[in-house]
Length: 121
Image 1 (cartoon, rainbow, N blue to C red):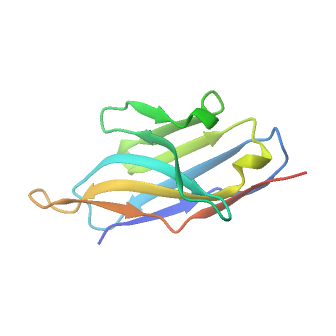
Image 2: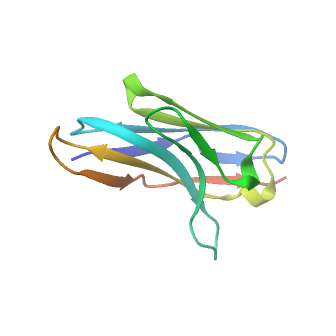
């Protein structure tokens, strides 16, 4: 079975930067769209950024110009570079990926376990 493992969260001061990573491993034939979502306390999970298999990117308005999503296809890994962080970026960040485990099998969505990002002075 496929799985996603995230890393890179932590505590950072306002205006600082962090880089999140998410690696897909296990039984994988292909990894298609990948993305990052976040959930702050008392709020619903929201989209942060996605990157499609063709490399096209989509960002939430709140992070445009500050966050950059990228991926390494050879490593089945997606990254989120977060700059100019604000206290309102504080949340648990979750990785999501659309994965086919077998060539002729269905595509499923997988979630990582989440990584905490805290922006505070």
